[in-house]
Length: 68
Image (cartoon, rainbow, N blue to C red; front, side):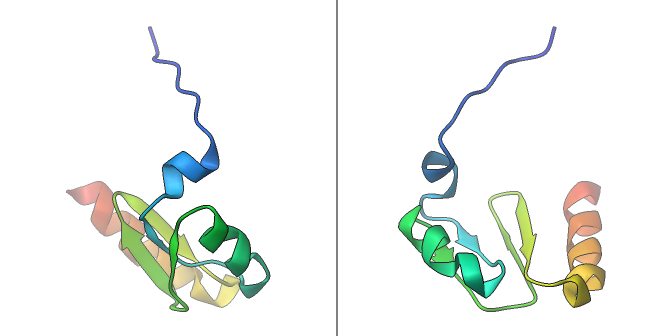
């Protein structure tokens, strides 16, 4: 049986280092995240990136995380 989880995104992002497209930077900050303007950010088992050009870095860090 799978577990069911419900959360508001603000609960999930509070205090987490994160990146994303600049147009959502303020939304991420308002949700309590620590916004970083970097190609990829790993924080608390969450991997984020900004642009399609960042996909290789996103894939690299995602694979590292999954290998742990």
